[in-house]
Image (cartoon, rainbow, N blue to C red; front, side):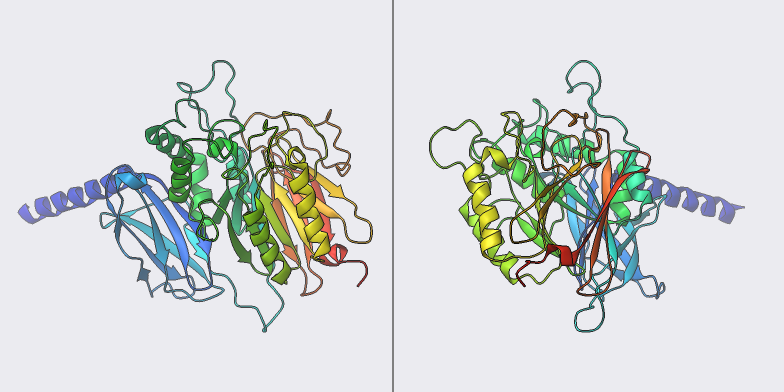
Length: 447
């Protein structure tokens, strides 16, 4: 009888400890960048705690590895980035989260993958990624009065159900309010509040994530290089996103690069060095010379069939209106970038952006060479801004989506004959439109 009582007490202690560990989790785990030999995993707790990940190859479930155990601290929003580094290329792994040495159960599968070592061996792998921008999560006490600006959070479940290899966030991933951007407390609150919604958690735990920013997760609406608190929002971006790197040439910013399969992605910073929209004197810059030179240096050596330039705002849309924050507000720099791409003979360039609260595909025909494409994917949950009355003369017919939506890009086919398929879906995951480009359509015509 006494032994039965002791066993019962031990069971209660174990159960209560496990429940306590569950309660310590604020958000995540989230899978970040993927390399051939390592993967980053982000976790946030509600207070300081010891966190680690156990992981195993799905083909060898009995052989488990662990990341280093790290303590979450208040100065990093009680979050850590754990590195799984006992990995081999082209493998899929399951993992489990431990907080204070107790397992934290999730009701969805936790998994990640490593990049495949296909070069010199076989054709590049088929893969897909999801993408979108403008994720607004309501919080009534800090929102503007009236109808809530955010809705249709179930779109995140629809993205999860498409099972892409990774999610590429196109900016406005958090919406700072007036009570947020003027203090570190407000900045961390907004990031934490958005990252913690239940609909987001399965996505975070089972697919890889990369991100850029735009004005609403950089600072106030239409903010630029003059935003006085930009170093704090940059620090928050570094804390909450497990990107491969942040900034170039030792300079601050979010600019980075990654490759998935045979496709190159150049993630650009359109805020930190941006001239104020209303400046009438001096050079007006969106990216600045150093970013453009870095981009061109990397584009000219890239052998990728598709080279994605990912940026917060539209690049090709020619409409000139003061409220449209796209590249046409910076005509000299826009012309410089497009001319350099042509003069250098760079093939396979595709622009990918968000911001506009509607989706569309723009195409710019160029004499003597291939057309440039600009995929705009927006909005996930923030209010919709119809584009049907906007005279974007470069819009491809049938590609305007004036509703909450997201896109999935799929890459297939053998080397030297790769095909990109972009499919845009509504909140429920139903197809709105699709567009296909073969890599050979993006070659210089004089070859």
